[in-house]
Image 1 (cartoon, rainbow over the protein chains, first blue to last red):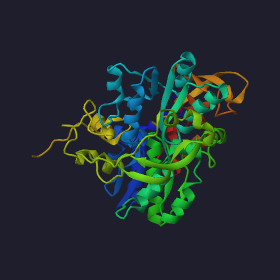
Image 2: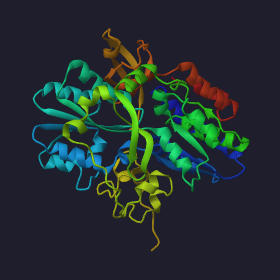
Image 3: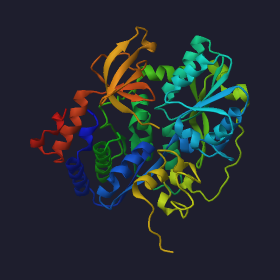
Image 4: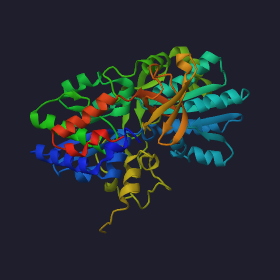
Length: 366
Length: 86
């Protein structure tokens, strides 16, 4: 496929890795924010191409992983009500709540449906005018315009039986939270390319300047990621902290104006809790007052957030880049994609699932 | 979740900017895609598609620029002409 295959050229990747090795004179720690990038890195072995001085730390960019358990529980409770059809993205159906997941609810008779696009949920609502259709809307900025369109059209069409259970999060506040942590070790970021396709990259300029970190807008193919790493280490070695955009084939400085217009019409910025991380100010999206009638929390009662339960799962530390999936004693033994203890093993973009799928179970000395 | 796939826009239906839909070819698999967020897209453009919505148009000139940079830093051999891969 054009705009994909040419960015997977193995010889170019090795040469770019060599250029990185020639540039680096001391150790540097970079974070790739997006779970899609984590998967590409592990799948293509990009981390293994890099010189040992460059460490890639996996970031919190997996919306399914950071959705609080109380939202999953709420979705399950709503799905269990008579006459309700609950729709969400396939990944979300397997995320464990405090007692099972949405697929288990379906096996108990709830009408739970996996949708590919939010407009599929809209179509379900049109076809079933006498049933309540709830779309469990999760995602980062990339997905927000699409999810916003479901609410926008429902309002335009006067579709009274569709509502959204919204757990939307924003990337830059999470990056700020990581940089503010007292034990932070991240020195540069590969910014999430598709988030920037929607949002642009102007909001990263004050972050780069304030925290003195290079931020490089990065795509998802091997050459994109290596190019991002190269630009980060080149800046770090030169003592620079700028925002660069080598993913310019699809990212413009001001983002996607048409998408932002609908996003800002439908959503407003609110505080959010991130599963495994905690509360982050201004880090999420909720429905704007004009769309309150389409808010599932208004229709079925608000989600009550409890304190985070701790347990064996270390996914919170994985999401913050504090440890690797393979550091967890349960990895690959008591915790697998079929029997996940935590969200990072569930989601197709969770770091634990990536290591399990592409790296297998490490040999352990006991 | 932020997975987005590039594909070529084959046809466009509808005049209302927010309701335009297109048929997009992803290496042989053709799917219907919402064009609300790429009002300037024309047939033949490559669009980046996420959960059924085109969220951006791929810029050929900018795409070539990255390969120019790779060549500059010696990461790409000129004779391979990688920037011309169809």
